[in-house]
Length: 226
Image 1: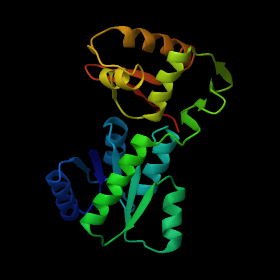
Image 2: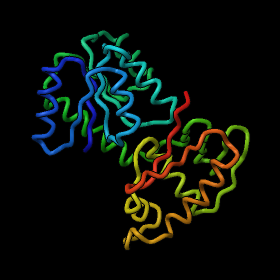
Image 3: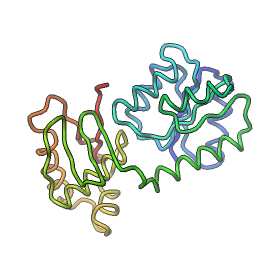
Image 4: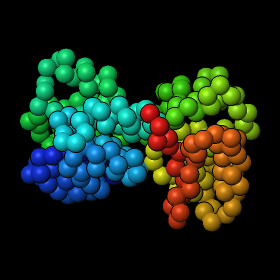
């Protein structure tokens, strides 16, 4: 897993990052809310671990802004605030789990792994939203703002996978395995052709371009607007 820890307690952060790396995960650290927000939007993380009380940008504000931008990366909230109302507030702000300080590393690790598995297998969501782009999976319908978007089956499946992984870089290999269901040379242009067609349908004529190419890596679907 690739994990981002947003924590201003440098000693605690150093210990946690070291411990996560020792069990085989990739762990990165931001010491304030503004840096954490920037890294969370750009880093393609599997799980975010966010302290509530942070300098420059408070933890719940980070989570709310991420959700408003369409980023659905699972979030584990860390906080010394441990009352029921505190936990409810954190979860309603968009957090997926809440762990009170002090905590045992083994419990944090277990919670992070559960959130990661939930994301990988998370097919229960019936609606996806990235900015003003919406997908109703039950109705098999897509619209941006008030405009209905008609997609071919493969385009729909491609968009569905991108929206499920909103805010994360999706590689060509990942698309081949999850959208086309087979393995072959990721340098083939079949993906580029379909991405180009999809982009023309969901982005053409709109001020914000949601589907972006990440040179040398793949693609990312995200919105910078709240």
